Amino acid sequence: MSRLVMKFGGTSVANVERIHNVARHVKREVEAGRQVAVVVSAMAGKTNELVAWCKEASPLYDQREYDAVVASGEQVTAGLLAIALQKIGIPARSWQGWQTPICTNGTHGSARIESIDGAGIIDGFSRGEVAVVAGFQGVHKETGRITTLGRGGSDTSAVALAAAIHADRCDIYTDVDGVYTTDPRVVPKARRMDRVAFEEMLEMASLGAKVLQVRSVEVAMVHKVPTYVRSSFDDPDSPGEGTLICNEEDIVEAQVVTGIAFSRDEAQITLRRVADKPGVAAAVFMPLAEAGINVDMIVQVVSEDGMTDMTFTVGTADYERAFAILEKIKDDIGFSSMAGEKEVAKVSAIGIGMRSHAGVAARAFRALSEKGVNIRAITTSEIKFSVLIDEAYTELAVRTLHTLYGLDAA
Ligand code: ADP
Ligand code: ASP
Ligand code: MG
Image (cartoon, rainbow, N blue to C red; front, top):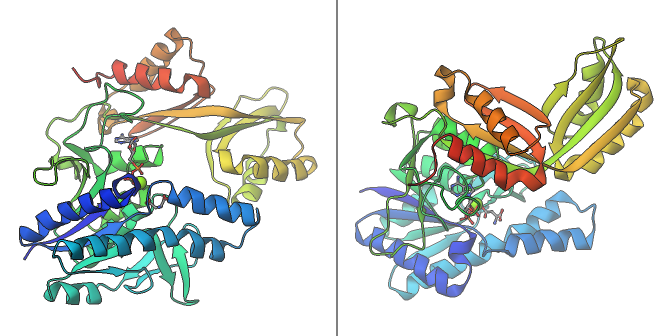
């Protein structure tokens, strides 16, 4: 018997009517003779509301209690979908993270799944029961406390569950009918892809395409879970196939650039007149790392008279903290002044074909300059490059690159 994990995101379960629609998708698969585990997110907007309540209760909230609060959104939808399934004659029960259990490490707020015991769910299959699993949440065995997997984490719950119960595939249902060359809400000319390689999807997700949580793509890649992105808004009786995330070898017509991603969640910090000598970079970046602050792009200009300027980016959420830490160690490091800018965005082009083509990024720099977009910083790696620009130009830059690399739909 084939086995399937279906995941439904927030907009797909935004209200009871949509939950009934989800039940119809599940019914189709059950009637096709499949054993089905469904992973659900919280109703659209619910997690944001819960997060805001925690902050309102105390800006310096206890992360363990934050998890107890925000995990509740998924508990509600799991129960509601089980009720909706039962209503149309499909035996179903809900599973909380701690009941399955989905065991994670103890990093509250962004925990990683360590193991999933699928025995109870598989036992339910033998009785003809659909498992409705609350996404996003798990349990830290050592402390017995509820954990959550970081924003967008239900994708990872689904793929990890598919690996654990040896499902034949994992279908991620969302509000778009697949993975596009860029966010279709920003670029109407974006094209849906039939297939996208794991490596490209990893880069797209980590560079801002929130259609899949980065970690879910890693899990799919490592455990070889055939994963599809599809739309829950398609007719439940004849849905489209969506986009398959697959191995590079399985892509027939490879392009040089396959996608454009962007993130507005960036802030830039510049340290002026830093001594250009061994140990300075460590002195700047170690304290930030110790505070759990991720530094992304780093640019250091050629030094004159032994002094240099150092520019780097951090996530917007870490900006104030990073500034405060650097202010404190200013005299130890010895820089003359510090400047920052929060209204910046990172635009990236991704494609496996970049490995074998020269000058791909150079064309982008020219195209952006022709549109009057100033580039503040650049980073490149094997299959992607990113530019940091003023946030106001984000859409213009994304559209320019999308057209430049021939990605616009006909
Ligand atoms: P869900 O609630 O189902 O998890 P998300 O909002 O997390 O849905 O992700 C789906 C959204 O991702 C889409 O509505 C779309 O705006 C956005 N998105 C960003 N980049 C892409 C892309 N390259 N392809 C498809 N969707 C994308
Ligand atoms: N509800 C969680 C969030 O909004 C998890 C998810 O939707 O994947 O981040
Ligand atoms: Mg999501």
